[in-house]
Length: 189
Ligand code: FNR
Image 1 (spheres, rainbow, N blue to C red):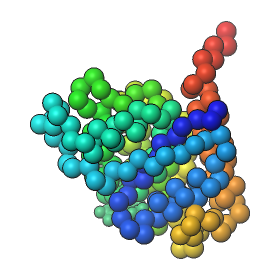
Image 2 (image 1 turned 90 degrees about the vertical axis):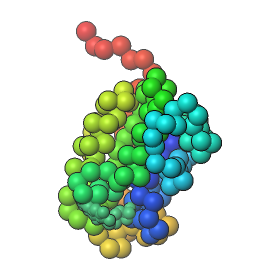
Image 3 (image 1 turned 60 degrees about the vertical axis):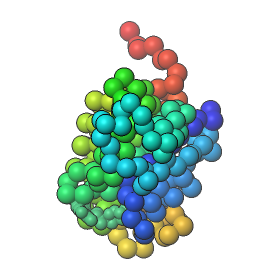
């Protein structure tokens, strides 16, 4: 440590509850994790027509990911999948062919919804993409946040003690996971 962790908020909405969740996670995370936000809002819609000549915004986006050791995805669920903005960003990160910058990053996935399913379905779809892109993923704990009004304030303060403890634990687990991914640990015989 310290470990460089890029985080991507899957929502580009003002007043995003997932952005609020990301603020809470940054506050509760172990000090050894150093965070950089990786913005996705300014990326144009990806097309392979760009493959020979990526625009500067996409080159910067990929360079910022490449400089990280780990990636944290904080995403809403749209129609039982990830928002198009996040899918678009992942497509940019994966291309041109052979220049996928998500590969080998230690990743974790979390999301918040006002509904009780708590982004579970979107997270499963995101995990499929991360598998395909060869990113090791923290399998457990899972975190499907049912974000009821007032649970997390605009500045990221968590108002419920058990939720705060759960989110802190999630980030401690991610820290330990990053350490395992970055350290070659022989399998027990
Ligand atoms: C939603 N929402 C939603 N919620 C959910 O739990 N499962 C879903 O499939 C969907 N689908 C969906 C589609 C579209 C187009 C919108 C705009 C919304 C509700 C969603 O969880 C809610 O708007 C959250 O506040 C979105 O997260 P952010 O943008 O506040 O972080």
